[in-house]
Length: 426
Image (cartoon, rainbow, N blue to C red):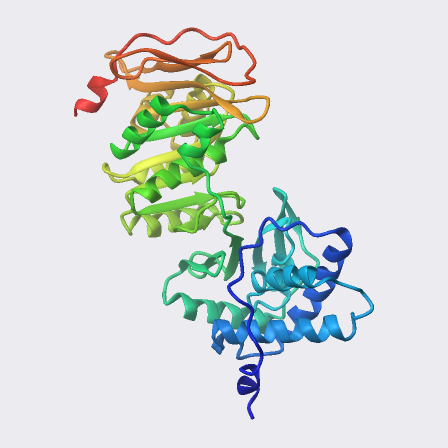
């Protein structure tokens, strides 16, 4: 009887619920870490792991855990319910990636970046840390080869979903082979969720959705940690629901999507430009950039087709500061006048959304429309403002207010009473 045939005799568990929110006691968590290391080594020793069906892989995992819990670890009394939770936990966190499975099985690790076989980073609670785990060079080559085979794609940049992971493989000529494994969360931010959290209301959502449908360009401006990535996720998922063709760039690993996802960390400027050209060649309907590096976003915006929508982020305290930061970068790096640089900004973006930290989440401090005056100067026309716990806005037809719960008053000029109609007539 072959090893593969022997697997068939084990009873399989019923369908496993997603366990991303399971919280173990410290003792059970310690046991899971111990088991994870051993199971990772076991699977790494099976070169045909990816040739097994999902049920056969589950059978092997269950067999291993049963042997451990009823054998070496039998001195640690566990209830049937605890065992079931451990089984479910491992069924959803074992991928066949060898030592990488140990990192991915840890609940506070949201993603793993394999820069080389000896240099592996992990995102733990939003902090990027170097892992002590390393791979054999041949292990990494084999893993990337198998993942490329599973993706069914042949490209220097490959994105696909594998179980509950978003997998990104970047290879030459963009850069030396790199692998990014990101857990896909159960709940993704949407405008509806932001409405439930009292960050938006129906009118603001309607305006943003309409502008997205028109392919408008937004710059999300905010201090660090004030909600840029959360709002960007909502934009992305709005377009996803509309079945749009999307591409997402980021530095770090905080975007909650498994769609055309590109992490530009550790890429040279030349490699980044090459990546931008390769992505834009696919003609995406919308581009999203969670990259705070202004030069990257300028390179991106300057190459966009007229019909391609665009949302980018920048760390700035006000719409005026974000405009000035872009103008300075444009003038310095592309050797043009400040006036020309500011006009280019008006060509790049239709709106700036300024965010501000609130007690529990964030608020939209301003939405300004970016236009150019007859004198050739950019103008920022305020369309929404936040003051004394209220949103005040002049979207088409009427000016309205919405109260934000637990919000602190801020001093800000009231919105100008102008219509958006002309902006959308074209």
